[in-house]
Each structure stands twice: as C-alpha cells, then as structure tokens.
Amino acid sequence: MLHLGFNTAIRMSFSPFQRFLYNFEREKTLSSSEFSLVPFFSAIFRKTNKMTSSVSSSSSRLLFPLLHTPQWAALRTKWAEPIRGFKTANTTAPVFTIRASSTDRKMPRVLITGGTDGIGREAALKLAAEKHEITISGRDPKKAKDVIEQCQAKFNNTPRFIQTDLSLASEVVKFANEVADEQYDICILNAGIMNPKPGRTSEDREATMMTNLVSSYMIAHKILDTRNDENRPLHFVFSTSIFVKFHNATPLGLRFFNPQKVSDWQKSLVPSDVSGPGKYAISKIGLATLSSSISLANLPNVTATSVHPGTVYTNIMSNLPARQQFYIKLARPFTTSLSDAGANLVRAAKNPLPAGKFYLAEKPTKLPAFVYSDLSIAAFEEVFEQFKIRN
Ligand SMILES: NC(=O)c1ccc[n+]([C@@H]2O[C@H](COP(=O)([O-])OP(=O)(O)OC[C@H]3O[C@@H](n4cnc5c(N)ncnc54)[C@H](OP(=O)(O)O)[C@@H]3O)[C@@H](O)[C@H]2O)c1
Image 1 (cartoon, helix red, strand yellow):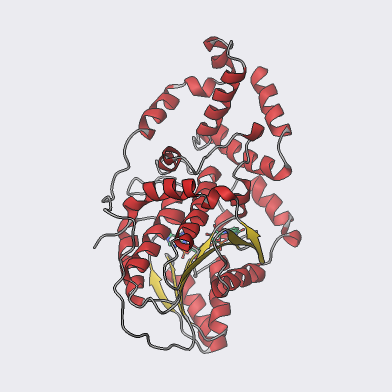
Image 2 (spheres, protein in one colour):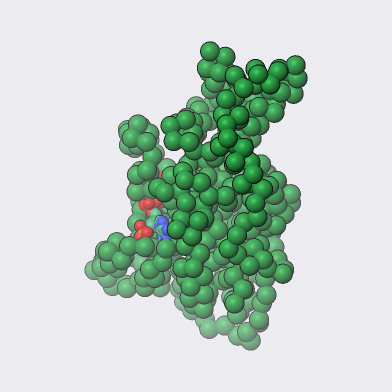
C-alpha cells in the first residue's frame, strides 16, 4: 500500500512529459528487470532516508523491496568494475598535422551515419538534391541501395555507401579510420537506436550507449586527429533528443543521472540484458555534451552542433511497448513530419550554432547548462577519453 501511495505521489509531481519519460522507464523496470532507473530509485531511497532518518531498515525493505534484492547488490558490485576493452589514451588534446593549402571544393562533402533510413535518409535525399557529394552509412545494404537509386533517378547524384555496425567497436574502428581519411567537410553523426533487444552487444557492451554515443565519440575524435588542413572548415552534427531538456525528469527534483559525476557516466556504460529509455536519454545527453566539448575546444575552423530533429514515428520506435507506439502514431498530426525532420538535420549541418545552443527542431535554443558546464564536460571526457582510437 505504502509503496503504491509513494509511486502515485511521485507521478502526480510530474509534468506530462516527465510522466511520459517516467512511465517509459517504469514499464520496463517493473516488467523486465530493467535496471537503468535503479540509481533513480536509489536516489529516492537516500533522500527519503534523510527526510525520515528514523525509518527502520525493515520499513525501508517494505518501501523499497528492489533495493534489498541480491540483483541490486550484484549490480552495485558490477558498477565498481573498470570498463574493459579499450586502451586508455595518454592525452585529451587532439593532434593536428597542418597541410600547406587546401583544395577548393565548391560543395561541402558530407558524411551521414544512419543515412539509410528515417531522418538520416531524408537528410541524405535533400543534400543529394543540392548536389552535395554524400556518403551514407548503415547496416543494411538493401536500404542503402534504395537511397542510392532514388538519388540517381531524381538528382543524378550517386551517394557512396559504407556498411558498418556501429554497435561493435571493432567495426567502428574500421569505419572511423576510413571516414577520417576522406576528410569530409560536414559529418552528421546521426545513427541511433532505442530500446534495442538484446541490450548487451556480442562484445559485451551496453548496446544503446555503444551505438549512439561511444561510436560517435570514437568517429569524431578519429576525424579530428586525422584532420590535415586546419584552414578548411570542419563541422560536426550530432542527433540528440528533446530528452536533454528533461534530464531532471524525476520527482522531487532528484536526478536519475548526474552528468557532472564520473561515476554516473561509468555506470551508464555497464551492459545489462535490457537497454531501456534511460540509456537512450543518457546517450543523447552525452551527444550534446560531446558536441559542446568539441565546440568549446575552439579548434581552428571546427564547429559542432547538436540537434533534436523533431519527434517522428520511424523504425527507431519499433521496440517501444505497443501502447506507446500507438500514442505516438496517434499524435502524428501534431508531431514533426519526416520531411521537416530531415530539413532540420540539414539546417544544423549548414548553420553551426555557438557552444551552449542546439536546434530544437528548427529553432536555435539554449542547451541546459548541465550539458556544457565545465564539470560535466570534465566528467564526460574523463570517462570517454579511453575510447579514442590510437593507431
Ligand atoms: N524519430 C524521432 O522521433 C527522433 C527524435 C529525436 C532524435 N532522433 C534521433 O535521430 C536519429 C535517427 O533516428 P530515426 O528516427 O531516423 O531512426 P531510424 O529510422 O531507425 O534510422 C536509424 C538509422 O541508424 C542506422 N543504425 C541503427 N543502428 C545502427 C548500427 N548498429 N550500426 C550502424 N547504423 C545503425 C540505421 O541504419 P540500418 O538500419 O541500415 O542499420 C538507420 O539508418 C537517431 O539518432 C535518433 O535518436 C529521432
């Protein structure tokens, strides 16, 4: 009873969007042992303990049974483990070799990860129509063939396709080396997933974090490290989400994730069998932080902008619970069209914003301070520096 009452009180303190995010996570947490909100419950637990320091341990067992399970104890131990699989880099500073002159190209050459489907595909078609030389990437060659054929038939433009699976570090290294050599002018790092099944990759990494954020970090830094002409503008675009605006989507002002804490970034990378919307939100906060980190580094002629392209029903939502898919489809007339979302990505590619801003659909908007505060960037870089490719 007490537990139910507490949950209801939590939900009543939410704005409608916060409730949406909370329900998202709760549904997974309760139905399939998704642990990504365990820190959130833990925070509530700690706060409640402070408020009612007289609560006995037996009451806390009653109120928060999840926190007294062997799984929770195992998870806490696991979080303390170091992250495996990547060499630790020696420095955070990108290395440049300066080339004397640049070849004057008329149209910027554009890389679009996730250009085979959804919003990235739409952006690819728009850029192809403008005669840009584009490269798209994705896992599925059939989808790529369709994009290429459309570009050829409609715009007499043939995009290049690079097949890669960005959930696998071994493939990301190959991909990053290849695209870094190409010296693109605009790199739209857009590929993304939500609620993947399984949540753990075959390399034993957290699937959402690896695909959405770690791979983007690896690719962006390889491109920066390999850049050979610092007089030529280089612009990064990162597909983030409106979730960055709702990072405080927890009751009583408690955060389920604090980007200023090294330990929270480390925990986010720990694989579990289910990778829920909490991981998606963190990966998108991370992309906005990565974008800010590159922007604030003030590298010559390097810009970076993150963009929430709009809410569109695409394949990315295919792993959401049926009820949520239904609501999102129902809301279609009020959400962004695929064409507008593609245009929003293109706008971000052509019009870099200063650090501290991002595109909320078509509108330049202030990023929440936590995304680009010195503390958040320092914590983020401390954890992610290990993913820089050294070869
Ligand atoms: N749809 C929305 O409402 C919305 C809102 C905010 C932000 N976004 C962001 O916008 C981006 C694009 O989303 P979307 O809605 O267009 O999704 P989508 O239609 O599912 O497209 C996702 C793209 O990413 C690629 N991709 C997925 N997993 C990959 C992997 N492991 N390796 C390589 N490529 C992979 C897919 O290519 P293959 O299928 O060929 O592998 C596809 O081209 C995502 O980052 C998403 O988070 C979307």
